[in-house]
Image 1 (tube, rainbow, N blue to C red):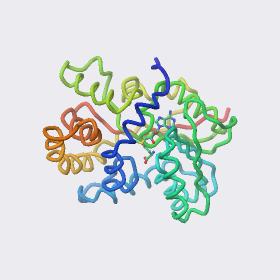
Image 2: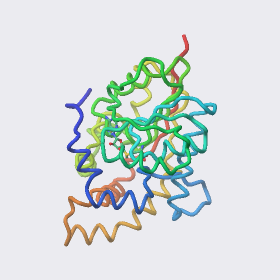
Image 3: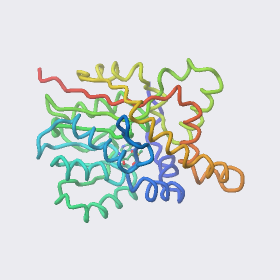
Image 4: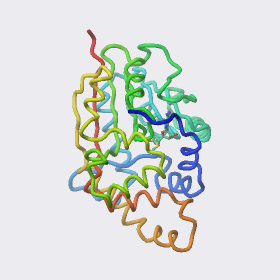
Length: 284
Ligand SMILES: C[S@@+](CC[C@H](N)C(=O)[O-])C[C@H]1O[C@@H](n2cnc3c(N)ncnc32)[C@H](O)[C@@H]1O
């Protein structure tokens, strides 16, 4: 199943509005992803949780220093920089938003990764790289935007060498949306539409491993990491519930799409999970 194609206008609206930029720059310190909190840790330390999530990714990639890794949907490059500086990986980031790439290059110049993270325009459904060029690949909360997840996974498979590793992290609906009751389904579909999250309407916790298998991967682990993400989810909801109410009543809600999505997602939290899928391209 696939949708129409790359919705660049939609992505520009999601990430380009002043409210989104403020949210990601100030609140998330340039990372455009959730966070990982260990049992017993405070949920209020969002930046530590984001750093820990990046470390989970680095450990799941489990690649030696110098390995070549694709960051599919690199945003402004904070994950790529983390993989380069903390794990010694050589990271090639691709993204379809020119303003994200410009920011990734600007921030990269002062990140101390000695050029081990580079950034290029590219749609991860049709990557500008040859077969088997990478030892690893990851998608940190980007597959949700895929207009054709099966094709994206096939493309990751193509650019990985045999034995190469893929890690997918992100929110995912627990099951097919058409099996939900009308109210949660309407809420989820409306914010997925607003966030241009086409992929998240196609894959879910019940079928992503199968899609990986069909793309030629062996799934090593499909980890339901929801308990580690929930503290960040709760903290973000607590921070933004009231600001969102104010914006909704007296501001322009369309400009604050991220506030909306964090609050509305929380209302349907029993239907949302976070997964970390680790898969390998077989050597035979
Ligand atoms: C939630 S952000 C995550 C950015 C980064 N991975 C991070 O964690 O900070 C999603 C990113 O995926 C990018 N993206 C969406 N669809 C894409 C596609 N087809 N090809 C490449 N990048 C894409 C968006 O432009 C955006 O920068």
